[in-house]
Image 1 (tube, rainbow, N blue to C red):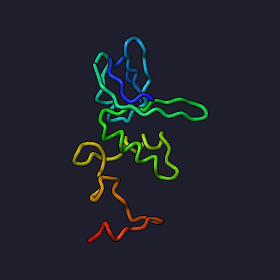
Image 2: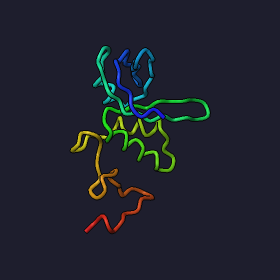
Image 3: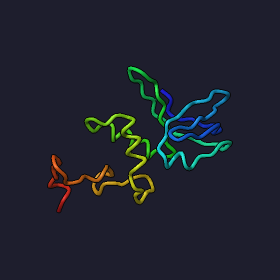
Length: 125
C-alpha cells in the first residue's frame, strides 16, 4: 500500500498530477482544489489511497489527512466508488476546517432530509 508521497511536482493536469519521488513519477488523481494548490517544480507531501479495480490501478491523492478521511468515508455509502467520491470532494463547499462540510455530531457529512433519507432523532434535540 502507498500511504504518502513526498517529492517534486512534475506536472499538473485537469484531474491528476505527476509527483516524482526518487526518480519515479507517480500519477495521482486529485480533487480540483488540491490540484489548484500545486504547480510544477514545487515540493509536496501527498496522502494517498491506492484503488485496484478490474481495469485499473489508481492512486488518489490529498493534501490533507482530513480530505483523505472524507474520501474513504464517502466510499462507504452504497453506490459511491472512488471516482464519484473524488468528484464529490471537488464540489463540496469548504467547511470550518477548509476541507468539506462537516457534520454536527460526529464530524461526518451533513445529512439532508431528501427523499429516502431518514432523520435520526439522536441528532436533533
